[in-house]
Length: 435
Image (cartoon, rainbow, N blue to C red):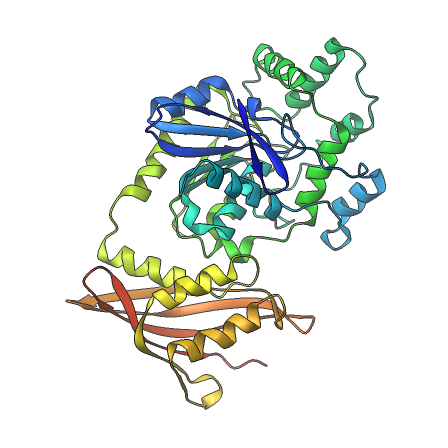
Protein backbone atom coordinates (compact mmCIF):
# COMPACT_ATOMS: atom_id res chain seq x y z
CA UNK A 1 0.00 0.00 0.00
CA UNK A 2 1.05 3.56 -0.59
CA UNK A 3 -0.36 7.07 -0.38
CA UNK A 4 -0.96 9.97 -2.75
CA UNK A 5 -1.18 13.68 -2.02
CA UNK A 6 -4.41 14.83 -3.68
CA UNK A 7 -4.89 18.53 -3.10
CA UNK A 8 -4.93 18.91 0.68
CA UNK A 9 -5.91 15.25 1.16
CA UNK A 10 -3.72 12.21 1.74
CA UNK A 11 -5.26 9.21 -0.04
CA UNK A 12 -4.11 5.69 0.79
CA UNK A 13 -4.44 3.18 -2.05
CA UNK A 14 -3.41 -0.30 -3.19
CA UNK A 15 -3.24 -1.84 -6.66
CA UNK A 16 -3.73 -5.46 -7.74
CA UNK A 17 -3.70 -7.27 -11.06
CA UNK A 18 -1.58 -7.07 -14.20
CA UNK A 19 0.43 -3.88 -14.72
CA UNK A 20 -0.90 -3.61 -18.28
CA UNK A 21 -4.52 -4.33 -17.31
CA UNK A 22 -7.33 -1.87 -17.92
CA UNK A 23 -7.61 0.32 -14.81
CA UNK A 24 -10.64 -0.36 -12.62
CA UNK A 25 -11.29 1.88 -9.62
CA UNK A 26 -13.16 0.38 -6.65
CA UNK A 27 -14.85 2.95 -4.38
CA UNK A 28 -15.89 1.74 -0.93
CA UNK A 29 -18.95 2.85 1.02
CA UNK A 30 -19.58 4.65 4.28
CA UNK A 31 -17.71 3.63 7.43
CA UNK A 32 -15.61 1.04 5.61
CA UNK A 33 -12.00 0.86 4.46
CA UNK A 34 -10.50 -0.41 1.23
CA UNK A 35 -10.02 -3.83 2.88
CA UNK A 36 -13.81 -4.20 3.03
CA UNK A 37 -13.68 -5.31 -0.60
CA UNK A 38 -13.42 -9.12 -0.28
CA UNK A 39 -9.96 -10.19 -1.43
CA UNK A 40 -11.33 -13.02 -3.56
CA UNK A 41 -13.59 -10.52 -5.36
CA UNK A 42 -10.57 -8.32 -6.09
CA UNK A 43 -8.75 -11.39 -7.43
CA UNK A 44 -11.73 -12.29 -9.63
CA UNK A 45 -11.58 -8.84 -11.21
CA UNK A 46 -7.80 -9.03 -11.64
CA UNK A 47 -8.18 -12.45 -13.29
CA UNK A 48 -10.44 -10.79 -15.87
CA UNK A 49 -7.59 -8.52 -16.90
CA UNK A 50 -8.21 -5.45 -14.75
CA UNK A 51 -5.62 -3.41 -12.90
CA UNK A 52 -7.68 -3.02 -9.71
CA UNK A 53 -7.25 0.15 -7.64
CA UNK A 54 -8.72 0.38 -4.14
CA UNK A 55 -8.41 3.32 -1.79
CA UNK A 56 -9.58 4.67 1.56
CA UNK A 57 -12.01 7.58 1.34
CA UNK A 58 -11.07 10.58 3.45
CA UNK A 59 -11.66 9.99 7.18
CA UNK A 60 -11.25 6.24 6.69
CA UNK A 61 -8.36 3.86 7.24
CA UNK A 62 -4.96 5.32 6.43
CA UNK A 63 -6.22 8.28 4.40
CA UNK A 64 -6.27 11.77 5.90
CA UNK A 65 -8.63 12.75 8.70
CA UNK A 66 -10.66 15.95 8.71
CA UNK A 67 -9.13 18.47 11.18
CA UNK A 68 -12.43 19.63 12.67
CA UNK A 69 -14.53 18.91 15.76
CA UNK A 70 -16.60 15.73 15.44
CA UNK A 71 -20.21 16.20 14.31
CA UNK A 72 -22.73 16.35 17.14
CA UNK A 73 -25.72 14.03 17.31
CA UNK A 74 -27.97 17.05 16.76
CA UNK A 75 -26.22 17.88 13.48
CA UNK A 76 -26.49 14.28 12.29
CA UNK A 77 -30.17 14.11 13.28
CA UNK A 78 -30.99 17.31 11.35
CA UNK A 79 -29.34 15.93 8.22
CA UNK A 80 -31.28 12.69 8.50
CA UNK A 81 -34.50 14.64 8.89
CA UNK A 82 -34.06 16.98 5.93
CA UNK A 83 -31.48 17.76 3.26
CA UNK A 84 -32.32 21.43 3.77
CA UNK A 85 -31.12 21.21 7.38
CA UNK A 86 -28.02 19.13 6.63
CA UNK A 87 -24.53 20.52 7.15
CA UNK A 88 -21.26 18.75 6.44
CA UNK A 89 -17.50 19.17 6.26
CA UNK A 90 -17.61 17.96 2.64
CA UNK A 91 -20.01 16.48 0.09
CA UNK A 92 -20.11 13.47 -2.18
CA UNK A 93 -18.82 15.78 -4.90
CA UNK A 94 -15.69 16.44 -2.86
CA UNK A 95 -15.19 12.71 -2.39
CA UNK A 96 -15.58 12.24 -6.16
CA UNK A 97 -12.91 14.89 -6.71
CA UNK A 98 -10.62 12.89 -4.39
CA UNK A 99 -11.10 9.88 -6.69
CA UNK A 100 -10.36 12.01 -9.76
CA UNK A 101 -7.25 13.36 -8.10
CA UNK A 102 -6.03 9.85 -7.30
CA UNK A 103 -6.40 8.81 -10.94
CA UNK A 104 -4.49 11.91 -12.00
CA UNK A 105 -1.74 11.11 -9.50
CA UNK A 106 -1.46 7.62 -10.99
CA UNK A 107 -1.29 9.03 -14.54
CA UNK A 108 -4.56 7.32 -15.49
CA UNK A 109 -6.58 9.26 -18.04
CA UNK A 110 -9.68 7.05 -17.81
CA UNK A 111 -10.84 4.01 -15.84
CA UNK A 112 -13.74 1.67 -15.31
CA UNK A 113 -15.39 2.67 -12.03
CA UNK A 114 -17.22 0.45 -9.53
CA UNK A 115 -18.74 1.85 -6.34
CA UNK A 116 -20.56 0.12 -3.49
CA UNK A 117 -23.19 1.79 -1.27
CA UNK A 118 -21.90 5.34 -0.60
CA UNK A 119 -19.15 4.37 -3.03
CA UNK A 120 -21.84 3.98 -5.70
CA UNK A 121 -22.97 7.53 -5.00
CA UNK A 122 -19.38 8.75 -5.29
CA UNK A 123 -18.94 6.77 -8.53
CA UNK A 124 -22.04 8.45 -9.97
CA UNK A 125 -20.73 11.88 -8.96
CA UNK A 126 -17.32 11.07 -10.46
CA UNK A 127 -19.02 10.19 -13.76
CA UNK A 128 -21.06 13.40 -13.69
CA UNK A 129 -18.28 15.76 -12.64
CA UNK A 130 -15.42 14.17 -14.62
CA UNK A 131 -17.08 12.32 -17.52
CA UNK A 132 -13.87 11.95 -19.52
CA UNK A 133 -12.32 9.93 -16.67
CA UNK A 134 -14.97 7.18 -16.64
CA UNK A 135 -15.03 4.43 -19.28
CA UNK A 136 -17.83 2.46 -17.66
CA UNK A 137 -19.81 2.71 -14.42
CA UNK A 138 -21.07 0.08 -11.98
CA UNK A 139 -23.24 1.18 -9.05
CA UNK A 140 -23.75 -1.54 -6.41
CA UNK A 141 -26.41 -1.40 -3.63
CA UNK A 142 -26.70 2.38 -3.94
CA UNK A 143 -29.28 5.01 -4.89
CA UNK A 144 -29.81 8.29 -6.74
CA UNK A 145 -29.92 10.61 -3.76
CA UNK A 146 -33.71 10.95 -4.04
CA UNK A 147 -34.97 10.36 -0.52
CA UNK A 148 -38.02 8.44 -1.66
CA UNK A 149 -35.99 5.64 -3.23
CA UNK A 150 -33.38 3.41 -1.62
CA UNK A 151 -34.27 4.43 1.91
CA UNK A 152 -33.40 2.36 4.96
CA UNK A 153 -36.02 -0.19 6.01
CA UNK A 154 -38.04 0.96 9.01
CA UNK A 155 -37.48 -2.48 10.55
CA UNK A 156 -33.73 -1.88 10.58
CA UNK A 157 -33.80 1.55 12.22
CA UNK A 158 -34.05 0.40 15.89
CA UNK A 159 -30.97 -1.80 15.47
CA UNK A 160 -29.03 1.03 13.80
CA UNK A 161 -29.99 3.48 16.56
CA UNK A 162 -28.85 0.95 19.17
CA UNK A 163 -25.48 0.63 17.42
CA UNK A 164 -24.99 4.40 17.25
CA UNK A 165 -25.83 4.85 20.94
CA UNK A 166 -23.71 1.92 22.13
CA UNK A 167 -20.61 2.66 24.20
CA UNK A 168 -17.36 2.39 22.22
CA UNK A 169 -15.69 -1.03 22.52
CA UNK A 170 -12.81 -1.15 24.99
CA UNK A 171 -11.12 -4.36 23.84
CA UNK A 172 -10.07 -5.90 20.55
CA UNK A 173 -12.63 -8.68 20.99
CA UNK A 174 -15.44 -6.21 21.62
CA UNK A 175 -14.46 -4.19 18.55
CA UNK A 176 -14.48 -7.27 16.31
CA UNK A 177 -17.82 -8.41 17.74
CA UNK A 178 -19.31 -4.96 17.10
CA UNK A 179 -18.04 -5.04 13.52
CA UNK A 180 -19.48 -8.49 12.91
CA UNK A 181 -22.85 -7.46 14.33
CA UNK A 182 -22.89 -4.29 12.21
CA UNK A 183 -22.59 -6.42 9.06
CA UNK A 184 -24.90 -9.18 10.30
CA UNK A 185 -27.99 -6.96 10.52
CA UNK A 186 -27.65 -5.70 6.93
CA UNK A 187 -26.43 -8.89 5.22
CA UNK A 188 -28.48 -11.25 3.09
CA UNK A 189 -28.96 -15.02 3.35
CA UNK A 190 -25.28 -15.93 2.98
CA UNK A 191 -23.78 -14.05 5.93
CA UNK A 192 -20.32 -15.46 6.60
CA UNK A 193 -19.37 -14.67 10.19
CA UNK A 194 -15.82 -15.98 9.84
CA UNK A 195 -15.10 -13.85 6.77
CA UNK A 196 -16.67 -10.74 8.29
CA UNK A 197 -14.74 -11.26 11.52
CA UNK A 198 -11.49 -11.35 9.54
CA UNK A 199 -12.49 -8.13 7.73
CA UNK A 200 -13.30 -6.47 11.07
CA UNK A 201 -9.85 -7.41 12.35
CA UNK A 202 -8.24 -5.94 9.22
CA UNK A 203 -10.08 -2.70 9.88
CA UNK A 204 -8.75 -2.65 13.43
CA UNK A 205 -5.19 -3.20 12.24
CA UNK A 206 -5.55 -0.09 10.06
CA UNK A 207 -6.93 2.18 12.78
CA UNK A 208 -10.53 1.04 13.09
CA UNK A 209 -13.56 3.24 12.43
CA UNK A 210 -14.43 6.16 14.68
CA UNK A 211 -17.92 7.51 15.24
CA UNK A 212 -16.71 10.93 14.04
CA UNK A 213 -15.48 9.51 10.73
CA UNK A 214 -18.71 7.60 10.21
CA UNK A 215 -20.83 10.65 10.99
CA UNK A 216 -18.82 12.93 8.70
CA UNK A 217 -19.46 10.59 5.79
CA UNK A 218 -23.14 10.26 6.72
CA UNK A 219 -23.41 14.05 6.77
CA UNK A 220 -21.78 14.18 3.32
CA UNK A 221 -24.51 11.90 1.98
CA UNK A 222 -27.31 13.86 3.62
CA UNK A 223 -26.01 17.26 2.49
CA UNK A 224 -25.55 16.24 -1.15
CA UNK A 225 -28.28 16.95 -3.72
CA UNK A 226 -30.52 14.50 -5.52
CA UNK A 227 -28.61 13.26 -8.55
CA UNK A 228 -31.62 11.97 -10.53
CA UNK A 229 -31.88 14.75 -13.14
CA UNK A 230 -28.12 14.73 -13.79
CA UNK A 231 -27.96 10.92 -13.98
CA UNK A 232 -30.09 11.17 -17.11
CA UNK A 233 -27.09 12.77 -18.83
CA UNK A 234 -24.73 9.80 -18.27
CA UNK A 235 -23.81 8.10 -21.54
CA UNK A 236 -21.15 5.57 -20.51
CA UNK A 237 -22.13 1.87 -20.25
CA UNK A 238 -23.67 1.42 -16.82
CA UNK A 239 -24.40 -1.63 -14.68
CA UNK A 240 -26.59 -1.41 -11.55
CA UNK A 241 -26.39 -4.26 -9.02
CA UNK A 242 -28.69 -4.62 -6.01
CA UNK A 243 -29.89 -7.22 -3.55
CA UNK A 244 -33.59 -7.82 -3.11
CA UNK A 245 -33.01 -8.39 0.62
CA UNK A 246 -31.04 -5.18 1.20
CA UNK A 247 -32.47 -3.47 4.33
CA UNK A 248 -29.98 -0.59 4.47
CA UNK A 249 -30.58 0.70 0.94
CA UNK A 250 -33.87 -0.76 -0.19
CA UNK A 251 -34.01 -2.26 -3.71
CA UNK A 252 -35.96 0.77 -4.96
CA UNK A 253 -32.63 2.60 -4.90
CA UNK A 254 -31.15 0.31 -7.54
CA UNK A 255 -34.32 0.40 -9.64
CA UNK A 256 -34.39 4.22 -9.55
CA UNK A 257 -30.72 4.37 -10.55
CA UNK A 258 -31.28 2.06 -13.52
CA UNK A 259 -34.33 4.06 -14.62
CA UNK A 260 -32.42 7.34 -14.42
CA UNK A 261 -29.40 6.24 -16.49
CA UNK A 262 -30.31 5.67 -20.13
CA UNK A 263 -29.29 2.25 -21.46
CA UNK A 264 -28.16 0.93 -18.06
CA UNK A 265 -28.51 -2.73 -17.11
CA UNK A 266 -30.02 -3.84 -13.81
CA UNK A 267 -28.86 -7.03 -12.06
CA UNK A 268 -30.68 -8.06 -8.87
CA UNK A 269 -30.19 -11.12 -6.66
CA UNK A 270 -32.90 -12.60 -4.40
CA UNK A 271 -30.58 -13.70 -1.56
CA UNK A 272 -28.33 -10.61 -1.55
CA UNK A 273 -28.57 -8.01 1.21
CA UNK A 274 -26.20 -5.10 1.72
CA UNK A 275 -23.23 -7.32 0.99
CA UNK A 276 -21.47 -9.27 -1.75
CA UNK A 277 -22.56 -12.91 -1.28
CA UNK A 278 -19.73 -15.30 -2.04
CA UNK A 279 -21.87 -17.40 -4.39
CA UNK A 280 -22.55 -14.35 -6.59
CA UNK A 281 -19.11 -12.76 -6.72
CA UNK A 282 -18.04 -14.52 -9.90
CA UNK A 283 -21.29 -13.58 -11.60
CA UNK A 284 -20.92 -9.94 -10.51
CA UNK A 285 -17.30 -9.87 -11.71
CA UNK A 286 -18.44 -11.29 -15.08
CA UNK A 287 -21.15 -8.63 -15.33
CA UNK A 288 -18.63 -5.85 -14.56
CA UNK A 289 -16.29 -7.21 -17.24
CA UNK A 290 -19.14 -7.44 -19.76
CA UNK A 291 -20.16 -3.86 -18.98
CA UNK A 292 -16.56 -2.73 -19.47
CA UNK A 293 -16.47 -4.44 -22.88
CA UNK A 294 -19.47 -2.37 -23.91
CA UNK A 295 -17.27 0.71 -23.48
CA UNK A 296 -14.65 -0.75 -25.81
CA UNK A 297 -17.08 -1.86 -28.50
CA UNK A 298 -17.34 0.47 -31.49
CA UNK A 299 -20.83 2.03 -31.49
CA UNK A 300 -23.16 1.61 -34.42
CA UNK A 301 -23.90 4.74 -36.44
CA UNK A 302 -27.24 5.19 -34.68
CA UNK A 303 -25.60 4.69 -31.25
CA UNK A 304 -22.94 7.25 -32.12
CA UNK A 305 -25.61 9.84 -32.93
CA UNK A 306 -27.61 8.98 -29.80
CA UNK A 307 -24.50 9.44 -27.64
CA UNK A 308 -23.86 12.85 -29.22
CA UNK A 309 -27.46 13.84 -28.55
CA UNK A 310 -27.17 12.77 -24.90
CA UNK A 311 -23.90 14.68 -24.60
CA UNK A 312 -25.51 17.76 -26.19
CA UNK A 313 -28.29 17.82 -23.60
CA UNK A 314 -25.88 16.98 -20.75
CA UNK A 315 -23.88 20.12 -21.49
CA UNK A 316 -26.73 22.25 -20.14
CA UNK A 317 -26.33 21.09 -16.54
CA UNK A 318 -25.48 23.58 -13.82
CA UNK A 319 -22.80 22.81 -11.27
CA UNK A 320 -19.21 21.56 -11.25
CA UNK A 321 -17.63 20.74 -14.60
CA UNK A 322 -19.65 23.36 -16.50
CA UNK A 323 -16.67 24.85 -18.33
CA UNK A 324 -15.52 21.37 -19.39
CA UNK A 325 -19.02 20.56 -20.70
CA UNK A 326 -19.25 23.85 -22.57
CA UNK A 327 -15.83 23.32 -24.14
CA UNK A 328 -16.94 19.90 -25.32
CA UNK A 329 -20.19 21.40 -26.67
CA UNK A 330 -18.22 23.82 -28.83
CA UNK A 331 -16.28 20.89 -30.28
CA UNK A 332 -19.53 19.20 -31.33
CA UNK A 333 -20.52 21.94 -33.81
CA UNK A 334 -19.31 22.85 -37.27
CA UNK A 335 -17.77 26.34 -37.02
CA UNK A 336 -20.58 27.90 -39.08
CA UNK A 337 -23.45 25.88 -37.55
CA UNK A 338 -26.74 27.66 -36.85
CA UNK A 339 -29.05 27.18 -33.88
CA UNK A 340 -32.64 28.43 -34.10
CA UNK A 341 -35.23 28.95 -31.38
CA UNK A 342 -38.92 29.44 -32.07
CA UNK A 343 -39.94 29.57 -28.38
CA UNK A 344 -42.84 31.93 -27.85
CA UNK A 345 -43.46 32.30 -31.57
CA UNK A 346 -40.38 34.48 -32.07
CA UNK A 347 -37.59 33.22 -34.35
CA UNK A 348 -34.06 33.73 -33.03
CA UNK A 349 -31.08 32.60 -35.07
CA UNK A 350 -27.72 32.06 -33.32
CA UNK A 351 -24.17 31.28 -34.28
CA UNK A 352 -22.31 28.79 -32.13
CA UNK A 353 -20.76 31.28 -29.71
CA UNK A 354 -23.91 33.43 -29.63
CA UNK A 355 -25.78 30.32 -28.51
CA UNK A 356 -23.31 28.88 -26.01
CA UNK A 357 -21.89 31.84 -24.07
CA UNK A 358 -25.17 33.28 -22.68
CA UNK A 359 -26.19 29.81 -21.53
CA UNK A 360 -22.82 29.25 -19.89
CA UNK A 361 -23.34 32.52 -18.01
CA UNK A 362 -26.85 31.53 -16.88
CA UNK A 363 -25.65 28.14 -15.62
CA UNK A 364 -22.45 29.37 -13.97
CA UNK A 365 -22.04 29.97 -10.24
CA UNK A 366 -22.94 33.64 -10.58
CA UNK A 367 -25.84 33.00 -12.96
CA UNK A 368 -29.57 32.77 -12.33
CA UNK A 369 -30.18 29.06 -13.04
CA UNK A 370 -29.48 26.49 -10.32
CA UNK A 371 -29.91 22.71 -10.09
CA UNK A 372 -30.70 22.87 -13.80
CA UNK A 373 -30.56 20.02 -16.28
CA UNK A 374 -32.32 18.89 -19.43
CA UNK A 375 -32.51 15.48 -21.02
CA UNK A 376 -34.06 13.72 -24.02
CA UNK A 377 -37.19 11.73 -23.20
CA UNK A 378 -37.48 10.02 -26.58
CA UNK A 379 -36.36 10.55 -30.16
CA UNK A 380 -35.57 9.01 -33.51
CA UNK A 381 -32.40 8.94 -35.60
CA UNK A 382 -32.44 8.87 -39.40
CA UNK A 383 -29.20 8.49 -41.39
CA UNK A 384 -28.63 8.79 -45.11
CA UNK A 385 -25.07 8.67 -46.38
CA UNK A 386 -23.13 11.44 -44.67
CA UNK A 387 -26.09 13.26 -43.14
CA UNK A 388 -28.12 12.36 -40.06
CA UNK A 389 -31.06 13.80 -38.18
CA UNK A 390 -32.34 13.42 -34.62
CA UNK A 391 -35.83 14.59 -33.81
CA UNK A 392 -37.37 14.13 -30.40
CA UNK A 393 -38.78 15.47 -27.18
CA UNK A 394 -36.91 16.64 -24.11
CA UNK A 395 -37.61 17.72 -20.54
CA UNK A 396 -35.91 20.14 -18.19
CA UNK A 397 -36.01 21.22 -14.55
CA UNK A 398 -34.25 23.71 -12.34
CA UNK A 399 -34.49 26.59 -9.89
CA UNK A 400 -34.63 30.26 -10.96
CA UNK A 401 -35.00 33.18 -8.56
CA UNK A 402 -35.77 30.72 -5.78
CA UNK A 403 -38.60 29.02 -7.68
CA UNK A 404 -38.50 25.44 -8.95
CA UNK A 405 -39.72 24.86 -12.48
CA UNK A 406 -40.08 22.13 -15.08
CA UNK A 407 -40.66 22.23 -18.82
CA UNK A 408 -40.58 20.25 -22.00
CA UNK A 409 -40.24 20.77 -25.70
CA UNK A 410 -39.12 19.41 -29.04
CA UNK A 411 -35.73 19.60 -30.71
CA UNK A 412 -34.34 18.87 -34.15
CA UNK A 413 -30.58 18.33 -34.58
CA UNK A 414 -28.88 17.84 -37.96
CA UNK A 415 -25.46 16.15 -38.26
CA UNK A 416 -22.90 15.79 -41.03
CA UNK A 417 -20.17 13.19 -41.16
CA UNK A 418 -16.65 14.61 -41.36
CA UNK A 419 -13.51 12.58 -42.00
CA UNK A 420 -13.29 11.48 -38.36
CA UNK A 421 -16.70 11.89 -36.72
CA UNK A 422 -20.16 13.39 -36.78
CA UNK A 423 -20.65 17.13 -36.11
CA UNK A 424 -23.75 19.25 -35.60
CA UNK A 425 -24.58 21.39 -38.62
CA UNK A 426 -27.82 22.89 -37.31
CA UNK A 427 -30.35 22.64 -34.49
CA UNK A 428 -33.78 24.08 -33.81
CA UNK A 429 -36.14 23.85 -30.89
CA UNK A 430 -39.46 24.97 -29.47
CA UNK A 431 -40.86 24.67 -25.96
CA UNK A 432 -44.39 23.96 -24.84
CA UNK A 433 -46.06 27.10 -23.49
CA UNK A 434 -45.96 27.46 -19.70
CA UNK A 435 -49.05 28.24 -17.72
